[in-house]
Image (tube, rainbow, N blue to C red; front, side):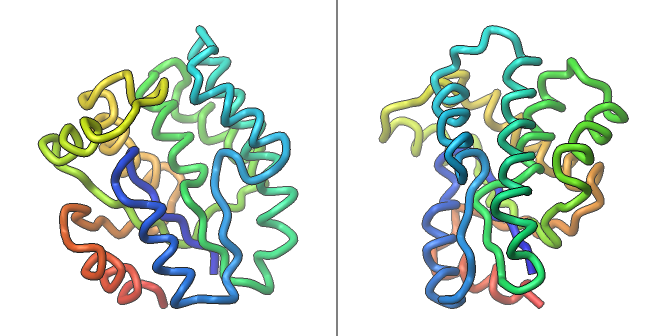
Length: 191
């Protein structure tokens, strides 16, 4: 099974992936962007917000996605549980918010990059604006986070649209719950 934990920055994805790894000790843990050598470089470029063109940023994400599918997902999908910190869903969500690529083209480009391979199920850790702003106030912000809470919340909403566009099962989870309650909710929804 290939699943992804999605959510905006500070939603608790890393915490939940760590908890899931305890429950699935043989699972392959991965992330997008940044799970491959090329992906690490792409992730640094995107987080630094050096790309002035939103199209360039989108294409960087697509390049990482293609490499990730080829190097990590395809060789392991038939034999291992794969738990990913983000997936194509985030990339599509960011592109939807940018509004520079129509949905049909967005789907075509992602199908090209992924060979049509997507997570079977996505878990979205949802934050309220109040909780998001509190969590952001406690950390040093990267280039994406500096765009502000309204931008990040629009991404959160777009994650839902992206799962519909890609035809992926979505489980929405209140990320303001306790860590254990969130973990249990995820485990209850893994078949």
